[in-house]
Length: 308
Image (cartoon, rainbow, N blue to C red; front, side):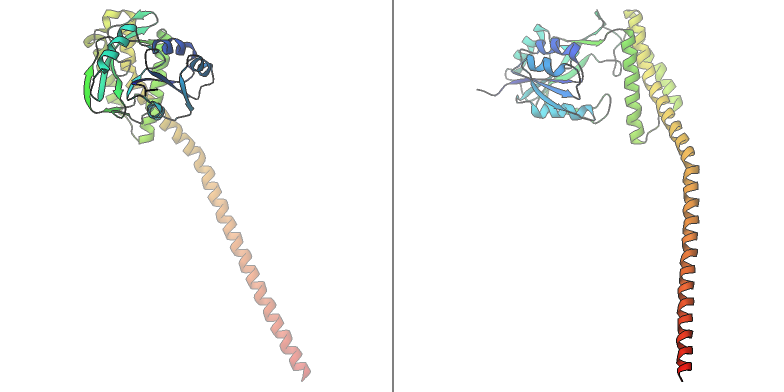
């Protein structure tokens, strides 16, 4: 049996609603590897039923679980597909053609992004959604960063691009979109707190307006009606919410510190009193031992004198 040429890699966390359709769209690959990260739903049963090779575990960062999947792939070429993405037949055919004699490197794939059943063509950006990704690459030519959200990537080798697009069901509806904004900004704030960074208030406000304008006007989000407005709000609110969550975490930390400070001072005072009492007890013990020793010497001396 020859080694597979193309491995499709899917990283999933409780994606039973999306996983089957995603796996079926990847059936053209020589092997399908599914990384199950702390899954508690029916994702495992679905992947096993459709013949995928499973990697199970718990990884703290997105980059960690993706690297675990990349290491497990047997094919030299890897196609990363998220559970909410689908590989249309036209893209599958083009990928096979491109890989025939391609040099090791990374290949960009354009994305058709959907909110619900509506194809949204305009307004996407780095934070609310992307229109192209380095999803197809030679093993070893792409590495993920360790950020909690929007991890950076590093690529090397030859670079190319296909014309057929991946289908991406980004959000179910507007509610789902803003739930994603809340989730992403929380993770971004955690990254900044871990690095000891604090975004400025004025800079965050400026970024709200500049990113809203970029999404709604420069990227023509206005052409998408209320969906375009929602995407522009996402783009602008992301840095502002991240800033506010960092400030909230700092405030809560100060409150805990203020609460613990009197307890710490009281504990220190109690320790000082205890040390002082221990010192007094030791002094008394030493004094008593000295007195007892002195009395014993006097008694011995008296006994000696009475013997004479």
